[in-house]
Length: 86
Image (cartoon, rainbow, N blue to C red; front, side):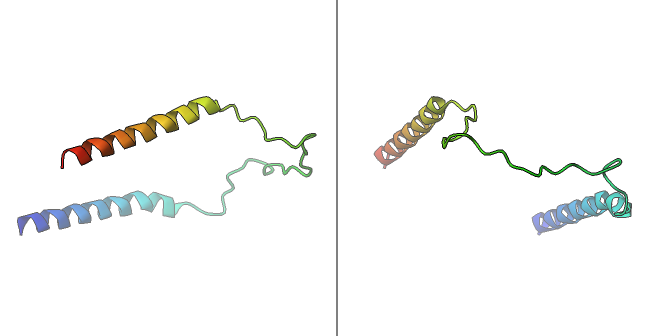
């Protein structure tokens, strides 16, 4: 019974903290603009690439494939070890 009371007290304390933190946010006016002056500009024309290839993102594909193979190997090894213990 003591455990349930502690858990209930912890939930109520977290709820009280959440309400206390939310009060300053609720007191702000929604009409205050976040931007000074004009808002951000909008791009009107989208540049199309000259050729039909994927853009270069800078990610080294070899490292990503190597990490995937390493994780797959670790998973298979763990499965083999856990099945051998049964």
